[in-house]
Image 1 (cartoon, rainbow, N blue to C red):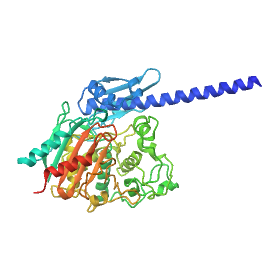
Image 2 (cartoon, rainbow, N blue to C red; image 1 turned 90 degrees about the horizontal axis):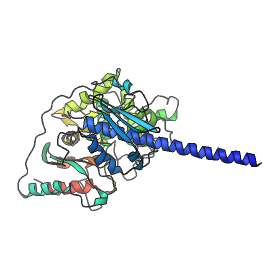
Image 3 (cartoon, one colour; image 1 turned 135 degrees about the horizontal axis):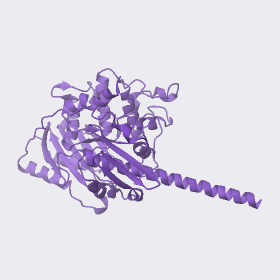
Image 4 (spheres, rainbow, N blue to C red; image 1 turned 180 degrees about the vertical axis):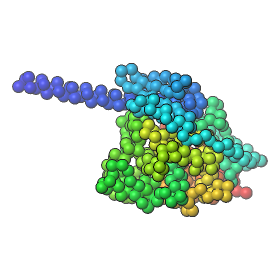
Length: 452
């Protein structure tokens, strides 16, 4: 009996140790993916130094997992290897026009193909500017300058860029030291709004339909195969997904930083509610959509070239870099870089009802559809991959009823106010809850602008 008990105890200890090792390995693998991707994109896409990315970005997360990871940059090969010896490693590979991609356990050499497939950007005329004179101009300048203040050390704002556009012209802008106007900066989940814009273009071309099931490999004969594209755009697919950036074990972190195929990782989740009945914000949703868009194109290179051909070149987003995963699918939820002025161009397109220089790019009614509350959104806070109301906004701040937002992790925002012809871009790294209030900031900008 004693021998049997001892064996059971030893077995239990072995299981506990195996579980602890698995958790440590997974946590450090995700952390290595985070650091490899951040340093790679920071160095090769944004043009920053690896030291600056580590000091200004990685340190801001105050993560013991990230602290254990060391990153090595190979400028000649365009790679970043992040590792914890004997435990975990991740390699990110830079390719011209495609940015950085995590090999995610695969051979980094497999990623050298398709380099340049997205195409070289077409030169674009700079956005027009307009000076606002007098007290209004001075007040606007003060509001924009205030965005770079740090009134609370524990809730650092880390604002890096602000651009204000009115009627298609830049009326104010400012950049933090070390972040020049021509630097590409990450939009994080603002990429979702770009993904929806690309969907809109395909809808206009008759290649996608929000009312029809989207489908995914492995769903045939499954209840998931009936989920409509519109349910995905409105974050109401009913699929399970854990959207938590504070746990290395969450679905979103494992998908973005440890999966070769982000769309497949999300599509493997079970159906937890009837489509259209439950709203749940999910980055996995956007990657399923990005993967489905790939199926529209006969050739992979045609898909990779599509964002630039159909959108970026058309509206002058020459700086935009949309990064794919190791399977070759754009990470439609999170990985898109552009300058602040080029992020503003996205907002201008929506402020102009999907028309650019007299040419309609988005279907008639698409902007209205994007800014209409999803039926399942409990507070009407979300449309079709655009936010209609921002969480944590000051109760005292009020925006016009038609305002809507592209929003991303760390306080990335493109706010569109069509009735005022205003677009407000803010980029930075505000990680603490309440560190940045875009609603209050835009309200101040609108007050400063006044009405002509």
